[in-house]
Length: 310
Image (cartoon, rainbow, N blue to C red; front, side, top):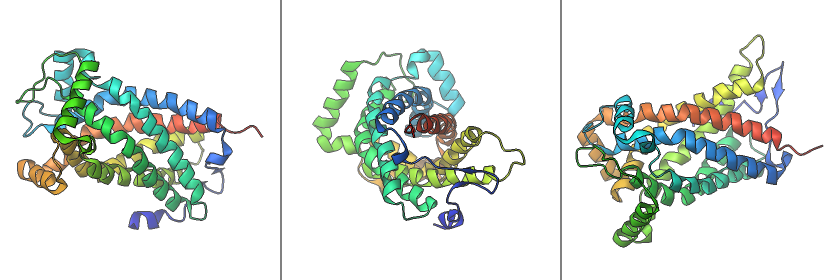
């Protein structure tokens, strides 16, 4: 909350030389906005999926059994599985676009509902609320997708060359349901929202804060989109670093089917020590940088395109 207090004075992105209005939901054509954001979601998922797959495999393995690090994982996956290996389970994750649309609409709607608060608190509350709603839709998809990412992986962490298709997806769905019931699709749900809700709640205040700082720093002001392009990754990395330990626990819970957050956290510390809390952080940051760049440049562009004609 100290971070939020420091950001509280910032109501708009701007300074005395330039004020950049934050485009709100009521300023846009909703139909055009939703259609454009669906296209953006597909592009983002395709660009970020390989690094998410690497991150998942690194976080699940114990004692660096097969992959010694992020770059080693990239090399081995490419060598033994080819380009396809980086997209195992991608066809299932596409359905996550539904969750992403619920995120966007919840975020914008909540910002409007909190109109009496300052911009930092509006962003914080809206970001957290949007993540909570979208995760309720996305967690079951993540459970299936992450298991598809690990298909063919042996006890030592190596992965055999294996094509992944609809039959594999249906088999995983059947296995999860038969072993754990419908609740099995929400394994790690609490851990998921404990990761993504704080991440999302922190991302937006960080984003607006960095935008305001950069906008008041330059003597010659660059285009607004350039500032937004820098601030998206900066905000994403800041939030990712703070929430990485819980992201590791979330991934392990979803893959293993265990219920206990404390047990998963204790096991991680016992096996890996404090260093284990940074497992997959490089891959996560590498995923966050292009992801946040595309999201914010694309998102802000889409909002401008979707403005109602006055």
